[in-house]
Structures are given as structure tokens and as C-alpha cells.
Image 1 (tube, rainbow, N blue to C red):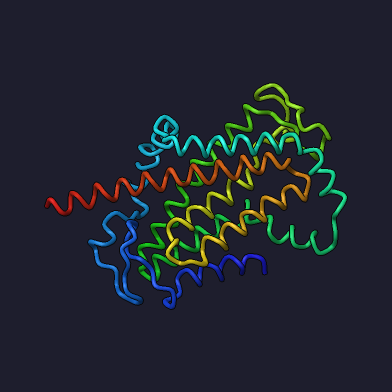
Image 2: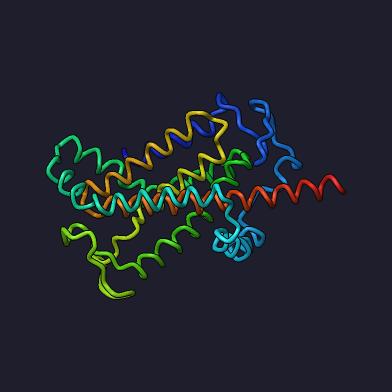
Length: 274
């Protein structure tokens, strides 16, 4: 029943009633129009080129802050400031949420939480198979870019958990309780939220690629936001954990998207020169 939500969303993405664009640079195609080879030249398939892109793209993503603009750094500043506010409020937020549980909220949180760990593999897998079976090269490509974004963001959040050994709220009321790097078990893996990172990675990837469908970004980010809140509700994470996890997933995925757009521009230039 829960997985059917994911399948229904994928059906809407693929439904001919909602016309798709034929390329990453936003050139629109007509509803039901077949995609030709020139319009999908930069799209991925599972092959050596795709697998090699993991090695060539990761350094670009990891070093992206070195190329940030003033606008980018202002955004970073806002996230840092927001995290600071939540750090101060973490204990109060936890106590308020835990005092206000209900049957309805329990069921809702149980339904939405798997979008942060169990559902993404199904979503990407079904998107890929749907793209292959229906010869929708865009959907096939989007599933593979999403998978790559998720691998990159997972590496960053797992590494952060090992460096910042913050204790989970289910074990303490002190949001500033930190262990030494690489020390302690799962109770010291609160920062950042892996669920928030994962769901915001998927939501951002799909929203960027299908932004021409006006309903996609609001729906994707709403599900992502609720998933993050479910982790606070279940007392698995502090609010600041969720914010940082979401920010990491979002901005790492946006960086991957920019890298892919740069590749497409180069591919287009080579095609025109030929």
C-alpha cells in the first residue's frame, strides 16, 4: 500500500497528458513526440561512460565550494545561521514534539518516514525500468543522475556522521553532547540526518529535471519536508540534524545537476561544430 504511492507518482511523471522536454537545457518537445538521437545525445545509459562519470564528477562536486559565488556564500550563511538558531532551540523542539503525539500523527509519520530510506531505491529502479521499457530516454537518464547524486550525498553524510559524533535525542536531552571522532555506536550518529539527506537528494534531482511540470517541485519538496519532520517526531534526530541533512542533499544534488548541464553544453557545441 505504501509503495503504491511511489508507483503512482512515477505514472504521473510518465503520463502523456503532461508533455516532457526532450533535453536537459529545457527545449520543449510536443506531447507524444518521439525523441530523436540528437535531442538525447547527452543522456546516460548504464555503461562505461556512466560508471566513469562517478570518478570524474565526484572531485568537481567535492571542490564546488572553491568556486562559489557571493550569492552561494550568502545561502551558506543563511543555512549556518538557521542551524545556529535550531541548535539553541533543539531541546525545546524535542520536548514539545514528544509531548504532542497522537494516533493520527503516529500513522502519518509511519507512512511518510520510509521516503527517507526504503522508497528511493524503488523510485529510481522503477523510473529506470519505465524509461527503458517505454523508450523514454529522459526518464532513464533522470533515474541514473538521481542515483549518482544519492551516492555522492551519501558519502558526504556518512563521513560527517563519523566526524561529528552527536548523540541522538532518544538517548539524551542535551543537544550538545558530542563524542570523539569515529567513537561510539549508532547512538552517536545523529548529525546529520541521513533520511533528510536522502529524501532531499531525490526530491531535488526529480524537481530539477521535471521543473517544467509545475506540480512536481511542490509535491517532491513537501514529501521531503514531512519526511524530515517524521525523524524529529520519532525522536531519531534533533531539528538541526534534519536541516543540515536536507541542505546537504539539496545543494550536492544541485551541484551534480550543474555539472551535467555543463557536459550537455559541451556536447551541443561539439555537435554544432561537426
